[in-house]
Image 1 (cartoon, chains in turn purple, red):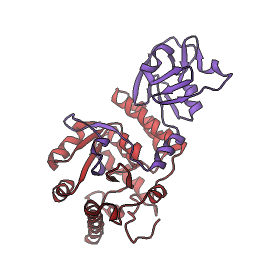
Image 2 (cartoon, one colour):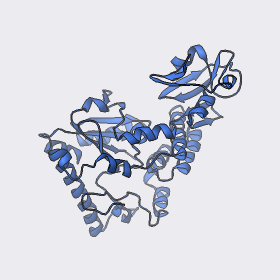
Image 3 (tube, one colour):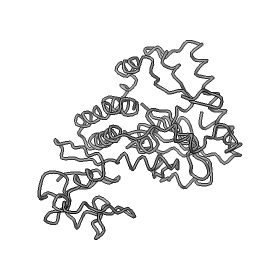
Image 4 (tube, helix red, strand yellow):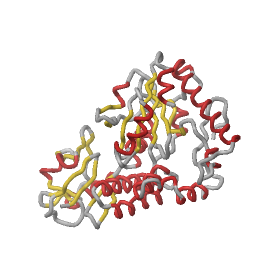
Length: 136
Length: 224
């Protein structure tokens, strides 16, 4: 069993993929990764990305989908820890640039120290002074 | 400090939200939170998500967000500056004049928050969109790779692979050397207390003329 960290999720990838790398079964892809295979391409929520024509085999084979090929196609970093069979797919610089350019604060959800969940957006209508700290 | 400001600005619509960037989780943050008896939200961020989203590379770092959810001051040191580098690492002592510099910087920054809390966009501390964009460093593949390595390291540490975790933290630091939050969190996960130890101070020394906390550019300051 391998593990893929993607889109804020921890996906346990079943064994049996057609080649090395983070391949996921197409029928479990949405539940595991958030990405879903649709006629128009690969979709994450509202966002759909067409797959390059003629290269279908690089992405999909025998009911499995190659997440590494998708990351490369999207310009997302993929890092691996071979010893533990763990991958992590990060954010594409181009996507980060779009978020930064809007100057709007990206939303997040985090628990407080008692376990109560907060989102940044719940403070809409108020000024927020968001400050980081650490014990270290 | 934030509790006193929360009380003082209670009549304004400012909310202070503190985020502990703490891969060890609540247990590491709790003694400090309890000591502060906060009435403002104190969130715990094991994966340093907030640092990633807002480009924070050190603590304490703050971002100011207005009523519409727009950033009016991007990530910057929250009321501290490089005078702390004159500290004696062994005793934690600072000379009176350096302490004075730190106090003045903090005072000025807190006055800026007060002014914005009371006057909103009329405050010269609130920046327009173009200036916010100008102050934010553009993303790069190195930094996104560093983030992926840090995330992987944090996951491996949490799942009992401490030495593999450190290998990925080292990669994150190599790819994004300006990120003190990677470096110091990694040292802390290696051994609690190490984040303020010999290796840390050596890395700070190695900066030479480069800033550890970049100066806060306030109204009337020369922009960087």
